[in-house]
Amino acid sequence: MNAKYIGGCTHWTKCPAPDYPEYAFTGRSNVGKSSLINAMTGIKKLAKISSNPGKTQIINHFLIEEEWFLTDLPGYGYAKAPKELRKKWEAMIKEYLERRANLMTTFVLVDSRLEPQKNDVEFIDWCGQKQLPIAIIFTKADKCTKNELAMSIGKFEKKMAESWEEMPPRIITSSETRLGLDEVLSFIAETNRYWVCPEKR
Image (tube, rainbow, N blue to C red; front, top):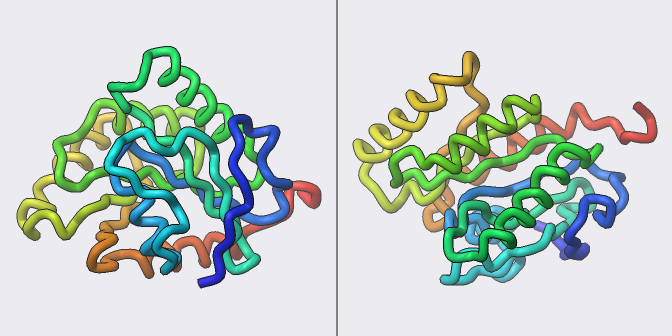
């Protein structure tokens, strides 16, 4: 896959011109976001991977196949970061999500091994309240058995059902086995069909 780094910024107004459809990837710190992006594009070091959560601190843009932007957002919920810094990251992410004109879908990554996490649920509910199009990507599916995976996802969906009448799209993935990666790319390809440049709307 042809992918190139366009640049990073700390404010939505400094993002690249909205000339292509855009897809944002976000989630709790250490959810496996960089690994998923690298596996999906087939470029090992496209997104930086770190054993230290909170590595991504800016909005990073990549141009994929000269057709669409992939945006790597800072992870949320990193408890060890200073409170003021966490607030700054959260404000940066939310302002970008609300104002970026060419944003087609935000992929919210959720660790498939964990019980429903408060900050995941709150972030997803906020997206729903703002009527932002999202899809949920369950990561690290290779780290648990099929039964464990089904139980974990079932708990998450039950929690979401408390505030969602209609569930957003959900995709189960593994960066190690490549499970679900083609499904993510197919979702993007299908959504690209509805792209209209903001200037022409």
